[in-house]
Length: 142
Image 1 (cartoon, rainbow, N blue to C red):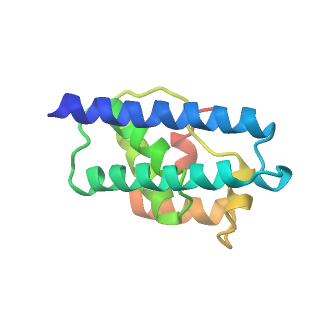
Image 2 (tube, rainbow, N blue to C red):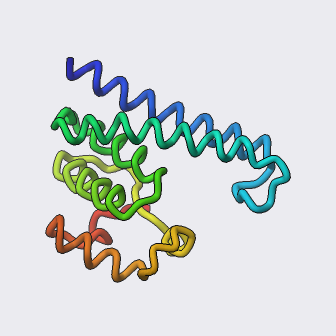
């Protein structure tokens, strides 16, 4: 069963990245407000929410076991911008790093501005550190 879950997470992540590239190529921009046809962006948002629901179910049921499961889960749930998902993503990345994971991970300052959570990156990272016991900057690798 674990191999199926690992394959599912990897496939969800790879499909997400493929769809993201397709939409950016079609729209010729990464910014919703710079494109005339907004439908692909909104459709993609719905797809991201569906993938996140699946991953959140797996997290809730302690189904993540393999090292890369934690990375893929984190990458998928951060596409649905909520502070809770960001916390869960960093909790997953912490586990991924503990298991020896080395892939790039992190967010540039612009991410926090776009999310409009009413807090600075430093304030958000303080809250996450309080919950997971490590400063997220120590988990980031660019």
